[in-house]
Length: 187
Image 1 (spheres, rainbow, N blue to C red):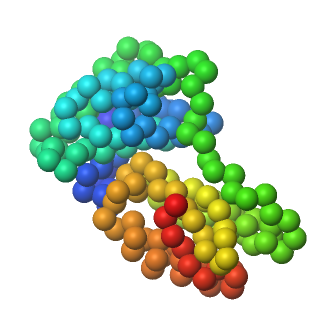
Image 2 (cartoon, rainbow, N blue to C red):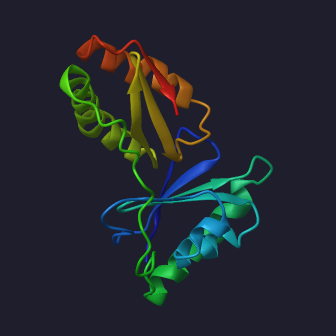
Image 3 (tube, helix red, strand yellow):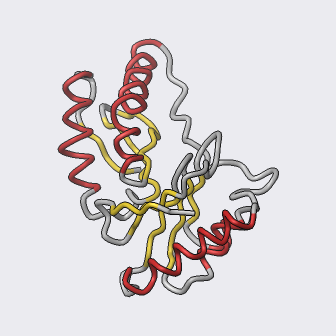
Protein backbone atom coordinates (compact mmCIF):
# COMPACT_ATOMS: atom_id res chain seq x y z
CA UNK A 1 0.00 0.00 0.00
CA UNK A 2 1.30 3.42 -0.95
CA UNK A 3 0.11 6.44 1.05
CA UNK A 4 0.65 9.83 -0.54
CA UNK A 5 1.40 12.80 1.67
CA UNK A 6 0.86 16.45 0.97
CA UNK A 7 1.99 19.43 2.93
CA UNK A 8 -0.68 21.94 3.88
CA UNK A 9 -0.49 25.67 4.46
CA UNK A 10 -0.53 24.79 8.16
CA UNK A 11 3.02 23.70 9.09
CA UNK A 12 1.59 21.64 11.95
CA UNK A 13 -0.66 19.54 9.68
CA UNK A 14 0.00 17.01 6.93
CA UNK A 15 -2.58 15.47 4.61
CA UNK A 16 -2.28 11.69 4.16
CA UNK A 17 -4.03 10.10 1.15
CA UNK A 18 -4.24 6.30 1.54
CA UNK A 19 -5.98 5.51 -1.76
CA UNK A 20 -9.17 3.80 -0.57
CA UNK A 21 -12.05 5.92 0.70
CA UNK A 22 -11.59 7.00 4.31
CA UNK A 23 -15.17 7.98 5.22
CA UNK A 24 -18.38 8.57 3.34
CA UNK A 25 -21.27 10.88 4.04
CA UNK A 26 -19.49 13.61 5.96
CA UNK A 27 -16.27 14.34 7.78
CA UNK A 28 -14.97 13.75 11.27
CA UNK A 29 -12.93 16.28 13.23
CA UNK A 30 -11.30 14.94 16.39
CA UNK A 31 -9.45 17.41 18.63
CA UNK A 32 -8.44 14.78 21.21
CA UNK A 33 -8.66 11.05 21.95
CA UNK A 34 -11.82 11.39 24.05
CA UNK A 35 -13.73 12.57 20.95
CA UNK A 36 -12.42 9.65 18.89
CA UNK A 37 -14.04 6.75 20.79
CA UNK A 38 -15.84 5.47 17.66
CA UNK A 39 -12.88 5.84 15.31
CA UNK A 40 -10.23 3.09 15.48
CA UNK A 41 -7.89 4.99 13.15
CA UNK A 42 -8.13 8.25 15.11
CA UNK A 43 -7.61 6.44 18.42
CA UNK A 44 -4.49 4.77 17.03
CA UNK A 45 -3.16 8.10 15.78
CA UNK A 46 -3.77 9.80 19.13
CA UNK A 47 -1.59 7.13 20.77
CA UNK A 48 1.37 8.70 18.98
CA UNK A 49 2.97 11.27 21.24
CA UNK A 50 2.70 14.68 19.59
CA UNK A 51 -0.54 14.12 17.62
CA UNK A 52 -3.08 16.77 18.62
CA UNK A 53 -5.77 16.51 15.94
CA UNK A 54 -7.16 14.06 13.39
CA UNK A 55 -9.52 15.03 10.58
CA UNK A 56 -11.09 12.34 8.40
CA UNK A 57 -12.31 13.46 4.99
CA UNK A 58 -13.75 11.43 2.14
CA UNK A 59 -10.38 10.33 0.78
CA UNK A 60 -7.80 11.70 3.20
CA UNK A 61 -6.64 11.91 6.80
CA UNK A 62 -5.19 15.19 8.06
CA UNK A 63 -3.05 14.91 11.16
CA UNK A 64 -2.14 17.95 13.24
CA UNK A 65 0.88 17.85 15.52
CA UNK A 66 1.70 19.92 18.57
CA UNK A 67 4.06 22.89 18.33
CA UNK A 68 6.86 21.02 20.12
CA UNK A 69 6.60 17.86 18.00
CA UNK A 70 8.65 17.31 14.84
CA UNK A 71 7.40 15.88 11.56
CA UNK A 72 10.85 14.33 11.14
CA UNK A 73 9.93 12.03 14.02
CA UNK A 74 6.15 11.79 13.63
CA UNK A 75 5.63 11.33 9.90
CA UNK A 76 6.93 7.75 9.70
CA UNK A 77 4.90 6.71 12.76
CA UNK A 78 1.73 8.29 11.35
CA UNK A 79 2.27 6.61 7.96
CA UNK A 80 2.81 3.22 9.64
CA UNK A 81 -0.31 3.66 11.79
CA UNK A 82 -2.49 4.57 8.81
CA UNK A 83 -1.08 1.68 6.76
CA UNK A 84 -1.64 -0.80 9.62
CA UNK A 85 -5.20 0.42 9.97
CA UNK A 86 -6.09 -0.07 6.30
CA UNK A 87 -4.36 -3.46 6.15
CA UNK A 88 -6.39 -4.57 9.21
CA UNK A 89 -9.66 -4.07 7.35
CA UNK A 90 -11.22 -2.18 10.28
CA UNK A 91 -13.54 0.70 9.44
CA UNK A 92 -12.26 4.23 10.04
CA UNK A 93 -15.41 4.96 12.03
CA UNK A 94 -17.63 2.40 13.67
CA UNK A 95 -21.34 1.75 13.37
CA UNK A 96 -23.36 4.59 14.78
CA UNK A 97 -20.62 7.25 14.74
CA UNK A 98 -22.01 10.49 13.37
CA UNK A 99 -20.00 12.91 11.22
CA UNK A 100 -18.95 16.16 12.85
CA UNK A 101 -22.12 18.25 12.72
CA UNK A 102 -22.23 20.98 10.17
CA UNK A 103 -23.71 24.11 11.73
CA UNK A 104 -27.07 24.79 10.14
CA UNK A 105 -27.01 28.54 10.58
CA UNK A 106 -30.05 30.55 11.46
CA UNK A 107 -33.24 29.55 9.74
CA UNK A 108 -33.89 32.82 7.97
CA UNK A 109 -36.58 33.71 5.54
CA UNK A 110 -37.04 36.35 2.91
CA UNK A 111 -34.08 38.37 1.70
CA UNK A 112 -31.72 37.16 4.45
CA UNK A 113 -32.61 33.55 3.62
CA UNK A 114 -31.67 34.20 0.00
CA UNK A 115 -28.34 35.72 1.08
CA UNK A 116 -27.58 32.66 3.25
CA UNK A 117 -28.41 30.37 0.33
CA UNK A 118 -26.02 32.33 -1.93
CA UNK A 119 -23.27 32.21 0.73
CA UNK A 120 -23.64 28.45 1.15
CA UNK A 121 -23.61 27.87 -2.61
CA UNK A 122 -20.43 29.92 -3.12
CA UNK A 123 -18.70 28.19 -0.22
CA UNK A 124 -19.73 24.72 -1.43
CA UNK A 125 -18.85 25.31 -5.08
CA UNK A 126 -15.74 27.51 -4.90
CA UNK A 127 -14.17 27.37 -1.44
CA UNK A 128 -14.66 23.94 0.14
CA UNK A 129 -13.15 21.93 -2.76
CA UNK A 130 -10.00 24.08 -2.70
CA UNK A 131 -9.71 23.91 1.08
CA UNK A 132 -10.18 20.12 1.03
CA UNK A 133 -7.14 19.96 -1.26
CA UNK A 134 -5.22 21.50 1.66
CA UNK A 135 -6.50 18.89 4.13
CA UNK A 136 -9.27 20.85 5.79
CA UNK A 137 -12.72 22.28 5.56
CA UNK A 138 -14.46 25.60 6.07
CA UNK A 139 -18.12 25.38 7.06
CA UNK A 140 -20.79 28.08 7.21
CA UNK A 141 -21.99 28.85 10.75
CA UNK A 142 -24.21 31.93 10.49
CA UNK A 143 -24.82 35.32 8.91
CA UNK A 144 -25.48 38.26 11.25
CA UNK A 145 -25.53 41.98 10.51
CA UNK A 146 -23.50 41.58 7.33
CA UNK A 147 -20.92 39.30 8.97
CA UNK A 148 -20.40 35.70 7.78
CA UNK A 149 -19.10 33.35 10.50
CA UNK A 150 -17.23 30.23 9.38
CA UNK A 151 -15.84 27.17 11.20
CA UNK A 152 -12.31 26.05 10.35
CA UNK A 153 -11.68 22.30 10.46
CA UNK A 154 -8.83 19.87 9.89
CA UNK A 155 -5.60 21.45 8.67
CA UNK A 156 -7.37 24.83 8.51
CA UNK A 157 -7.93 24.91 12.25
CA UNK A 158 -5.02 26.75 13.80
CA UNK A 159 -3.34 27.40 10.46
CA UNK A 160 -1.28 30.59 10.47
CA UNK A 161 -2.54 31.52 7.01
CA UNK A 162 -6.22 30.90 7.83
CA UNK A 163 -6.82 34.55 8.70
CA UNK A 164 -5.39 35.62 5.35
CA UNK A 165 -7.50 32.99 3.60
CA UNK A 166 -10.63 34.26 5.34
CA UNK A 167 -9.93 37.96 4.79
CA UNK A 168 -8.19 38.14 1.42
CA UNK A 169 -9.75 35.14 -0.25
CA UNK A 170 -13.16 34.21 1.04
CA UNK A 171 -14.21 37.67 2.27
CA UNK A 172 -13.25 39.37 -1.00
CA UNK A 173 -15.07 36.73 -3.06
CA UNK A 174 -18.25 36.87 -0.95
CA UNK A 175 -18.27 40.69 -0.94
CA UNK A 176 -17.84 40.68 -4.73
CA UNK A 177 -20.79 38.37 -5.36
CA UNK A 178 -23.02 39.29 -2.40
CA UNK A 179 -23.15 43.01 -1.57
CA UNK A 180 -24.85 42.32 1.79
CA UNK A 181 -21.63 40.71 3.08
CA UNK A 182 -19.38 43.22 4.88
CA UNK A 183 -16.99 40.89 6.68
CA UNK A 184 -16.00 37.25 7.25
CA UNK A 185 -14.88 35.96 10.67
CA UNK A 186 -13.91 32.62 12.18
CA UNK A 187 -16.70 31.28 14.41
